[in-house]
Length: 386
Ligand SMILES: Cc1cc2nc3c(=O)[nH]c(=O)nc-3n(C[C@H](O)[C@H](O)[C@H](O)COP(=O)(O)OP(=O)(O)OC[C@H]3O[C@@H](n4cnc5c(N)ncnc54)[C@H](O)[C@@H]3O)c2cc1C
Image (cartoon, rainbow, N blue to C red):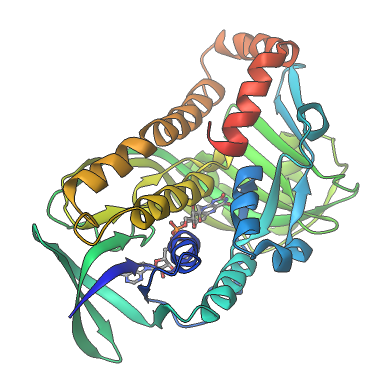
């Protein structure tokens, strides 16, 4: 028996796709490797754009999430050792917020709850896809569940596994650039309230982001060369906070406490070819970005939104066809490319320690602050991907 759509990976992007399809009465089977509830305690902060919030709102998920989300009303961009700085304010763009900060766990729980109410979604936890094969007529997914191997056939398999498990699929090639940098993530509290301001700060060691999360806390993403980040992990809490204060400056006073710190490697990766009938790739599986501008998750959500439209307008004959998938990929090309280029540009220009570049950077930030259309463009891009 063949199903219409199987989604491999029920993370935020795969789960959103299943929900978007369910709202149109389209049945899916979602294979998710983790146990039910295993992601709910994940405190990793996701930066949601205003556009992503609107997608979740339309799906009826946002109402239950508001209490866990912290609005970003201002983004303050600065660089260490320079007076140049730029401010982006929601008010100036007639938006209620520039974005929101939300924990991965809260979002996962809300999406799982919403999916459980949809009778057309068959969500199988602890089901790990082991292989995907595609032919000109269909795809098949081999998966392990309860120590038993099973195979499902479908017209379209959507790979939303976050890009970490199924790299070896015929016809899929990825281009990867290792930054040689790691990101340290944690949560810190400070002397002064955050007032819903998110800070992006560029230092000679690499960029850092401090995002308001909860009433008083901030989520921290501090990136730098591997050795540098490794050395930050060895500091005790007081030493770490002092070093962070020295790099970040005095904008929110002294830092009072830090939670568990963890680091992960940073890379930029994107699909180079996807000559794969009956198989689409979305979310982090399709592109992985540097977290500096908080773009990755939002681009993934827009993948899900766009693919749902193509699936909904396909006929049983065209679902998963080469033409349908080529049209979908074309629709996503410019948004993905812009997101990748934009983040890569920020990392390259602002993490560069060459003499002279630093001066240019502060001039750049100063000018950027004066030119309204440039900021307007940036806001639209960060909010909606346009
Ligand atoms: C360590 C880390 C820290 C991050 N920190 C930040 C941050 O601070 N801010 C930010 O904006 N973004 C951050 N990101 C990026 C952000 O998490 C991603 O953009 C977002 O999670 C992408 O969602 P996704 O659904 O595509 O993939 P994922 O969230 O990775 O979800 C993939 C899902 O697929 C499941 N899966 C994997 N393999 C299989 C398989 N073979 N069979 C079945 N299921 C499978 C997994 O269990 C998971 O539930 C971080 C990413 C990582 C890895």
